[in-house]
Length: 265
Image 1 (tube, one colour):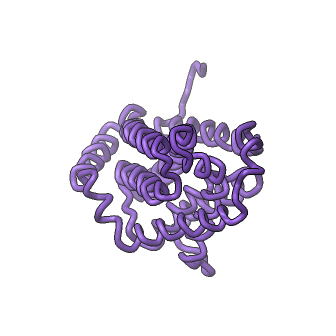
Image 2: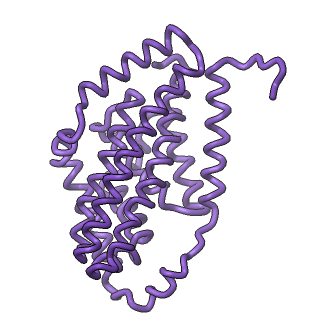
Image 3: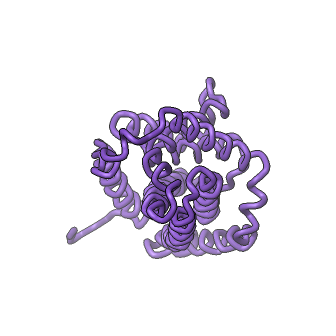
């Protein structure tokens, strides 16, 4: 405990965030393959990986093109935007730690709610032996969760720049080691400059994010396609949703606090 802590509330929150990000980084340095995955490995059909890649890519492209309006019907966007403005006004006036923490608290509450919904949906489809058809639903839940998190911090999600940020968030959350560090660096670079890389192609990024998700979920989606025991595979929807939720919360908070330090919000 610091006897004379001269840090500002903003600096204290920033220091806490850095600790949390480093903790998340340490957990992503190495992948430990589960015993269940090892047992399922020899049973996976050779073409399943490619099928999953295509299914996730199609889900992202379809939702980005036509599905955002459908997702927005599951929450009150205008109210979330108004709530953000109230929290921001309070933070500007009080300039204390409590008002700064209010943003992450709202995001966590939303993440918990969506986590429960994702788990219930995945388990329900797993009991019925529905694996691949669950992918658009799961992808929609991921994006719904990130969209709401973005709104809690005062960010939108329609532009190419925001879609790039969101796709990187998802890819990073399910990556490990050097790949994770590289993606995390790209996210931090975007937070700093707010512009797309010169060579950016949305279709290519969708493919990379879809591939990262399908690789991580390959065994569980295979298991989910088997009636009754598929509930185990479906339950993993919530596990990966939790990881994506945690990472999205960290990076949107990073983005928000960075903007506060720069006086941009």
